[in-house]
Image 1: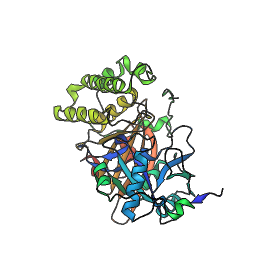
Image 2 (image 1 turned 90 degrees about the horizontal axis):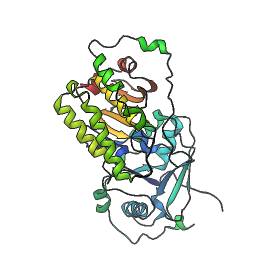
Image 3 (image 1 turned 90 degrees about the vertical axis):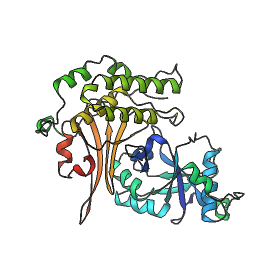
Image 4 (image 1 turned 120 degrees about the vertical axis):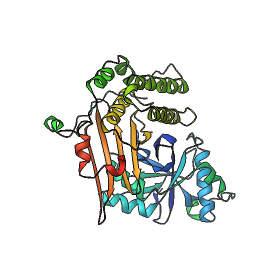
Length: 161
Length: 195
């Protein structure tokens, strides 16, 4: 089956635990640390979830994507955040660091919206910091996510293709 | 399987550059060095993950150990800062928030963090974070100016920064010792983060 590359307008979501959130000395969340986007030993791609796998409005897709993460094996904790990035901006940002990303829908058993970002620059902290600041700009709390409109989370035509 | 943290992170700069003069009054005293160096448990705590204990217990013990280590140099810390640091550690190491896939922070990383803060003595304290390999992270953020320091073992740090200047934004990253860090940051006017 051919790889399904995500479009530049598509959005991806990554769960970021409390320890990897950029905070001030009073624990106010300011964004994500570069460490939120480091690959673990043995990982060959960065795991994200694809919003437009689902059908509906932009906010409905985002909510469904977050629910897919919550239903997966990832242990979502109360103060963790859901970082959102636009695929095209990720590619442009990574290109500034000499990286060419391939962002591919690769469903897993526990998450049908799972996508892999291949060619990720895990060792380049300067680039990860740039992406954390300029691309992963939105980091939704659990409450933010719960305020998004819910839908039946039908699979989109592109998601089903 | 989780690996023990044993890697030595060699600095990318030559050892001769460590001799760069440090800001007057910024160095921790020999007494601080002695106290931090002589804590016998630093090494034993740095290289093991006790798989026989649950994560909540490990995190609780880690926080307790870090506070105990801090108490060894308590006379050099403002009480308000020590209270805040303890609060930050409790928050960071909260078992309800910790990703079970991540290694708890290593004692030798905390040692580097503490020594770095005693060296820099920043008026504005950093936010704390961690990576999945057991390293603590200190982050200072002032508007668009960002400084992120990953505390490795052996007084080594990895820093990445963005400094917003009137006509441009400068980014930089590097590895060095905490002794060299003030010199490495000097060109970026670190008072924007620390004061």
